[in-house]
Image 1: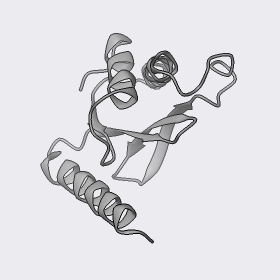
Image 2: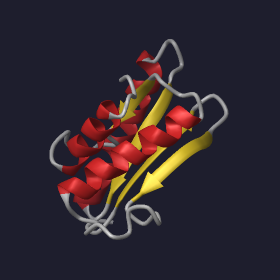
Image 3: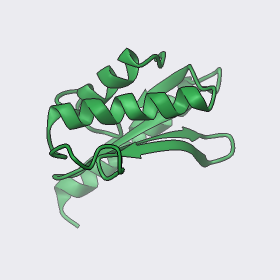
Image 4: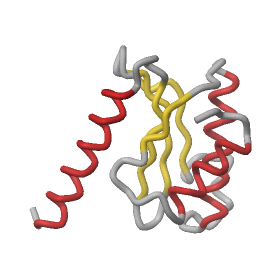
Length: 119
């Protein structure tokens, strides 16, 4: 494993640890993962270690979009927020997973906020 990968994993672990430490109300966590081609978002309940809702650019609703663009990331945020509202989830904590809050990560957050999730 390269030094860059080790540093990224360490930063992501630290981010999750701080979220869990400061999340005194134990709100659900919106975790975001990006690859070169796709975006993934899921709402996780840390108390039970289970995924409640998820969305990605590989879903049937979003397959027509070019998956590595800002508009596709925004649509993933909107879709995960829509599914979260259907599951009666309104308040979450945003887990950027060690990624810088910029570009596609920010677009997912903006799409989720615009669709009604409170961070």
